Image (cartoon, rainbow, N blue to C red; front, top):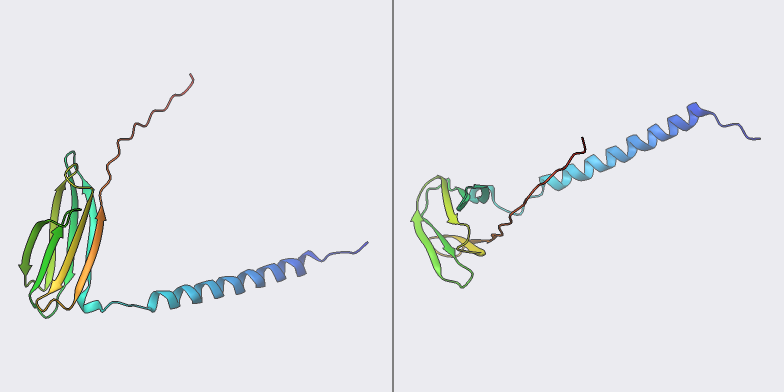
Length: 137
């Protein structure tokens, strides 16, 4: 019968785990440093919650030069439901949309020349959830 030294098995397992963790972390670090978007022109649209009748979004735009940009919202049929121009350097604006009015919106942020365009598709789906729990006494 062959005897197995547990210390040797544990050492090999630990070394393999350490190597796997090092490889995983190095791949993850490289993935985070790659950026396809210029950080100076960063546009974000975030869902910030809802109330009984409205869905809320916050649009942020880092515009360090303070150049004019346009923000336009379209409904699912391509109709403009909101459009305005801004020159804010650190733009932050909250929008509230009626829950039952739209199922899909498209937000477009473009500079004054129209050559730098960022598009966002926003899908709105409202579900009613009944959470019922029954415990036996």
